[in-house]
Image 1 (cartoon, one colour):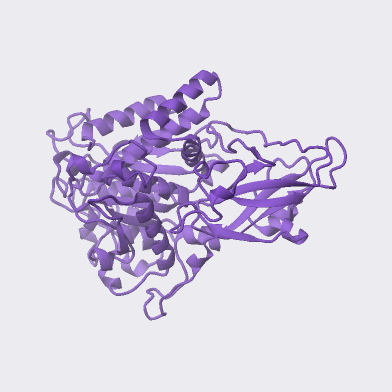
Image 2: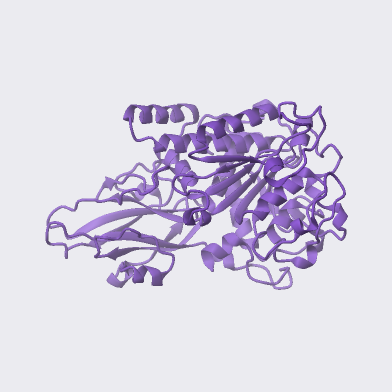
Length: 539
């Protein structure tokens, strides 16, 4: 069912009480940014110590592995979820709260090692409630420990409380951003827009979702009148990611999978839209104007002057359902909630839970070893584990070769992947981002030993995982969320007890995102990709 405003606030505070030292940070726009509360004494009575509604912002992050302010924390890829800027479009807030529930419960379960009875009981409960098996639980836990996800369940808190599109001053938050507006007095009039602005100014998001209602589509840039009939320089990546969202969201008898396309084509263009502003506010300065609103307390125009890095986000518009408040029978269930093919339990909330989680997966590629010599390996990412031990596998005496299996996640197209080996037994850090860095650390690519480069498709690609997980020698095909690559390594040089080899895998992914199918006359601006998410993995 749709969560009411008081339930959202109560749950946020419960999470903060339970996970504040492990996985969450809860702030408010009022305390953190000095913003007013929208509304009157009759609005949001559950928000104490003042009149009007409070804007709550929850950040999901493994605080033990990545303490705030640490080098590793500063390097985390960031994702933004906005439940609603239109208060009468009701699916989004519940979807992001339910997705957060799955993330936190899975990370908590996966962090428990002892007593084993407690760990097993927690995991059985997850499977009974949501149909989440071992691999999916580990996947969700990985997302918590390797990303930072900022959740703003109800940016338009007063509109959500009143079940109205606008705020109490009848201003539309999704016409309130400084993009393609000629008049600075017409932006940042709402507390919703100011809250989002303050969040964006403090992060470098790569992917974001903003949930709406009234139709069924996943839409991306452009969606502004100045770019009507033009494509963005990131169109290839946007189209592929939107298609993946639609595919994993799925459909059912009364609702097809989401259509995808630009906002100009599939929805309509607007001035002051959040989506185009978040995508291009840092690199199209001619369409960005400092705001000087006259509502609420003064809001300095310097707060809408941006550097060239802040606003390069794929902040996609998800029109969740044709009805702004769907019938309860159309919302879906928690049963098998991560399985898009379980159509009996699918619905507008269920599919947007999956869509949200997919955004967290796609924000950064990763490689994971899964099998050595028919031995299934434990997951390499464990929440709350600061220094997990390297995975060590004994090799039978007189072995000439060993079989290694690995998978690649966080990507749609896997352009090439290969194994690397090092004779050093003291490799404490096998992370490398370039070929040169790998060689500097003592690794050699196996293609130099006639080990061919491999390619494939990610788990969430339109064609599904390739090579298919059924190629694994030790896993059922449903147990691995990704393609499975298999290679034989020559270990005939390991002759003495204690001899070892360090094995790592690398991948290059989604290089097609740098290309375009459109002529230069259709692209505006006519340039290469401008978004963080494309440049982070291809540049």
